Image (cartoon, rainbow, N blue to C red; front, side, top):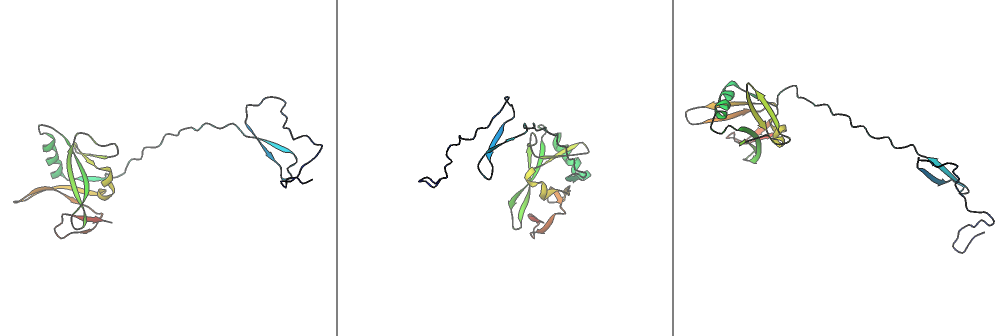
Length: 169
């Protein structure tokens, strides 16, 4: 029989009751079957606790940066100074081509920085610059007018005329 709200009413039948003979610790869900006449109880298995697997530490097979013997000697001289510090290599947005190397003294590496150790010296690579620097060679160059660290970077796609800035592939 249809009610005023358009629902089908079944007379002389008590509402369906889900019976359980013993208490269960497994949660259950009651669903109605497609004919909506009798509920069905579906038991869910207890949740399985997640086991944290230790992540393997991935170690690069090749150093992110190689340091020439001249650069090693200069870095050792810098670390023998009155306040020995580490050098962090990074890149900054600068120049005609877009990026320029940036070197700074730091006391300790950042949380995600890459530490390269070669021949007794440590150099830190800024985590944000790692993909721009990876595979590069660090050298120390001296001439009559200047002395500086120079980088040979295989990732450079384009460089400005003066060689101060570069673009990576």
